[in-house]
Length: 387
Image 1 (cartoon, rainbow, N blue to C red):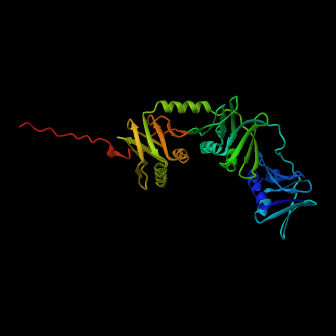
Image 2: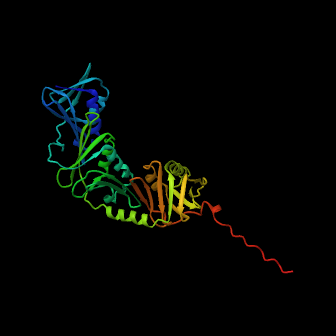
Image 3: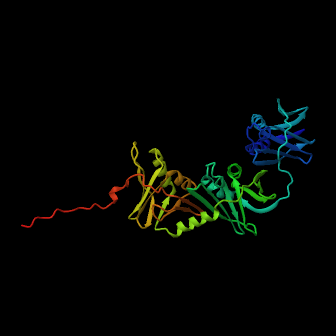
């Protein structure tokens, strides 16, 4: 029999069952419980791409190794309280707590689990740095025909780690200082795995990144604040991500800047919502005499215009862009951000601390200038007849 607190079992199930899905393939819907007399309970799940394992302390007086439906077990445990006792009777897992007794059918279906693989450590990252790197996830492509861009790309060097994601029209990058590997390592992680691990890592955690062989990577998540001991493994995609091209694009946009806008994130986000409220994504940004302005294109509903909180330096300039792409960049910034523009046809750069985004402009103007009052009015005086 295994005896464990409801809180510990529920926490572990909550973590690993995110790597389990309802599927026509039974293995993808299962959670495997392994326990021995060492006092450790291991829970494992697999969704066809990611393997997850959580380890927690439990009182074990016999060995146990069974697989049951993951989401059903999680739902049952959530209804219980205090101490839970697990045991096996014939072909069933028995779950007891106080006067409650639930029976789950054991499923004899093998699936890959994380075991005692030989791991080669690459780097250890703090949880807050790891979460900072995740800020680029929204830039990854969702187009099924562009699989090379459906990844979270990490580049680890001796003193830094850089995260990148792109969709062909915009790209995001974050660079953090770490104690990295002696040799440069590049990894392209599937977006499903990246989004899964993003829900599991907290600021106070410690994340060890290791390799378990060619294109196999393991992330071990632990915390000094609690007993979290979670491991996720995945197989990476072919490394064709255009990392260098993105950095070249960013450097080019930075070096060719003719206008720089120093803006408050809250003001720009409010203005983006204002554009969306007009039922359009077409966004116009203009600078004139040190003032930055934003407007939506004119629609049947009307037109929204706003003066942005901040300053504009350099040449007066105007550009059309998509509010959707602009929103992806602005919503991960805090406080002040910098927007750098060359002209209405070149990539637009957005920077905030160690975060950088590049956005392609809309190359065709979708409407007239929403701020015609900025333009000088030419007045022609009639010629006076000579007396």
